[in-house]
Image 1 (cartoon, rainbow, N blue to C red):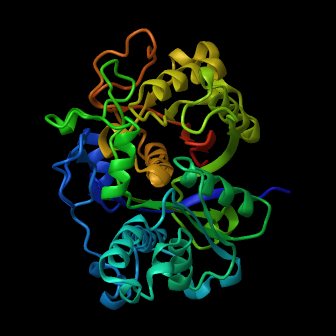
Image 2 (cartoon, helix red, strand yellow):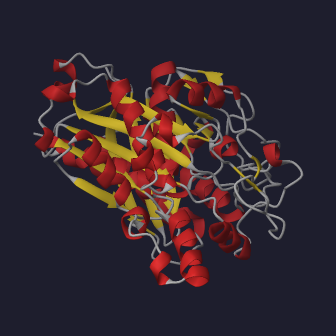
Length: 412
């Protein structure tokens, strides 16, 4: 018999605030975290804006010596995991550590460390490269460090599926608990991708917004004036837990994970498949996994990157699966406020879905004026709304054709 899986803790580090409450209040209020980049010299870059995390000090969460041995993305993951575990109010002394796991997602891992150490190699020679370079840089180290911190001896892995990474991590965690192989898993994603090389690479692809004079309005998913995505950074962590395990310890339950779908476009390294057919199949799989009809879904937190083809084809995919119900759905892209956290996007957007269910409040898509003929659904423009939400869906679609969808319901 399949186990039921619930969400019992949330931790967030984001461009719009650190901590679940500050993050959610900013998202509800439609606050933008996009601004001019401050972490390095941007004079020669065509794009000069991003969603930086500006209120984070690793030493507030991690021993100073240990923090120096972690890339920024790992620091984010450890800090957000601490918040999520604290929010779950779990007594770790009474948890079976062999049934306590960690599954995280990251798209690029320790890119900042890679760039800095490569510079040392070129400018100062191989002997100046840090002995901690490899364990700081490799993408699995966030999950490794979180596991070490909490003594979690169960499943421990990292998912790398570009911008679908964290949603795949949440979905995989759901399945591990559902089949009875774990009682509790720390999941979600972390990314620290606002670096000189990453910005240069995405700029060369012409993927980024160049609305440098109006950073707060630059990320505009589904709007006809969108001109590219805006990079973001941070971490979104969820505690997934087997229902009886959660009930036994009196845990607060934000919602229940009930469906998961993942597909491949098998089409192109960066462009989505025509009509969003891969995304459509992922949504259909999640619905089938949950055993519900499409008209039960109230809200979709869309991938909604603010790029031309993603927003057009995701809209088409929603219409394909939800048919006449598509026009009744409430859809929003919180990337309009946070920017695109790449491999961590599904982590904070999974937190948004949990908080939407818990608060019966649907956050807005800010900077939306007119979607034109391609984007003509209800994207909850500019102001959030209070509404009973029983089922919320989150989509994440990544380079390489990776598509992942999770479906969460109100716990009853």
